[in-house]
Picture 1: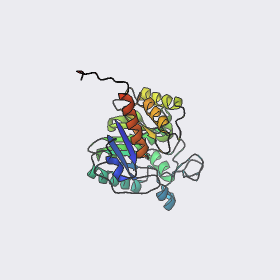
Picture 2: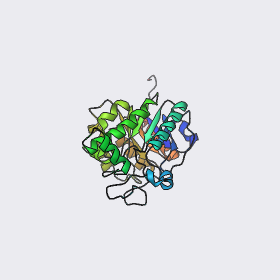
Picture 3: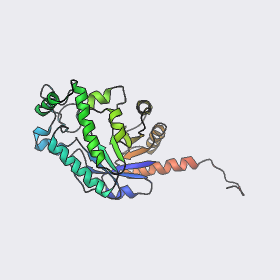
Amino acid sequence: MYGVVTRNAEEVGWSEFDVGFYEVKDVTGRAAEPLAEAVNMISCFGDNAAASSDPDLVPVDEAGEEATRDRRYFDWSYICPTHEEYRAGLLEIVEDCAAENDDVRLDDVGFPREGFCHCERCERRFAESDRDDWLAWRADVITDFVTAAADRIPGRTYLTLYPDPYDGHLYRRAGLDLDALAPHIDEFVVPLYDTHYGTTYWLETIAKGFESRLSGLDTPFSVELYAVDLDLDDLVRAAEVAEEYADHVYFGYDASTAAAAIRRKGADSRSGVTHRPGEE
């Protein structure tokens, strides 16, 4: 199955795509009305606009450094997952999306990276919790949010994972406990973005890593590829590698190139077939 991730409402219904993911809220903070014909997609704890407007929302490490896009290693600004008002707002968006389409995708879920968050609110809540281990407490925070969101989604719940399958990395970095999350998730989506795909060795390595990591769970996973300004042959080759390991392949942010890649793959699969008179 092939799909597209887009900000353009008209593209979700193109015939080449089996599913269309529509960004209702992205990391810039831009918001759009959910669509009935799309799997509406929510950037949960990535939000440049909210972080700029209210510094209290932003996670900090032990040194007080903020997880914002003007710092090294952060492509966008993050929101602390323990901020109750923001979480409540996210859950309202989930409900709005689910009212239009039963299926919803949760994107950018988790803490920014290792060492976050040590804001006063997180420190207090950890101290008040029944957990002695800070990493376990962080994982509880994320699992509780995902559980609450999934309870509001009557159909298929998708969850985007950071592209890091190595043992314990998602847990320590983002607070994602895959074993605890899997019962609430119908499909994990792993974005493996490149601006070239000139070599697919690393793509195969990471996809194989997720296949191994998730093999003991009942939750399927898909790979999402970047389609913007890509050579068509390179994108087709990347898709062929990805679908060796993933259940589905999705394409991000260029529906025209994605549709062309799917058509090319379909043509290639039919090439070399000879039909003789009397044969079906």
